[in-house]
Length: 333
Image (cartoon, rainbow, N blue to C red; front, top):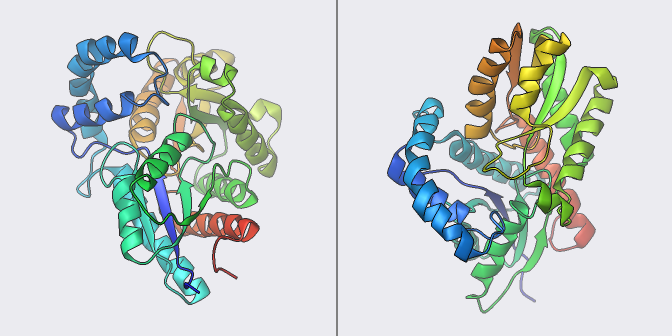
């Protein structure tokens, strides 16, 4: 009998290789060419993508990436890499066996294909795929699954697989986010809490994408864990693109409106982002703060993502172990 060898693949959306217009253009081209992300027929979408977006957006986006780029590179990439290293150490030590963990990005390097090839080279014959999107959406989670299946088309031997489609209501996830907020409160006076999630087009939700409901579920469970009443928190959606209607209310609109409702001290958390990235560090922590203060707000705090904290590693390990135990695809106890 072939010995079981479990491998873990962590996936995320990706990031440009550098904060330059050319690198951003390559990234946006891959991202916005995915039919999971943009559902318009190619005959309608390609003229917009190539004729307008890829001509104008890369320079503007590169300037935004430059604001959050570090000596280590893209925060999304180095945090995800750090998570993989720590998670491998955690799982291997916990079960006294080598459990390789690699990463793969939907639209950039290292790719999902390269991550799978790395695991195969280490003898993996059972696979657990964890898209690092706590709330499932076809625009994110399903794209990772698509890329994994596309790679398998070239393999003769397909490993036994477990796809973790979401962990939006997993007790360990709810507790980890809640504890991070409580830790913030120990250093900063508690104030109104805004949960900001990445948006998707409203028509995607109407077509059956469960993302909006999962976001609301996560926020409600976290608020309950924190013992907040309904007047102490709310949910909004950020990062919309184009003129079509997206999930609402929009975060930038909420930030402008709260001071007029005499809510002038707020804290913002983004539970849909496993690691900090452009959308949290620039759109919320920088631009969102400016919007709120210009609207009359007095205090704005962004509560960072879990990133590669010990609490995040422990939570991800718990999610992986519990998912594999239920489906009996690994040799974990």
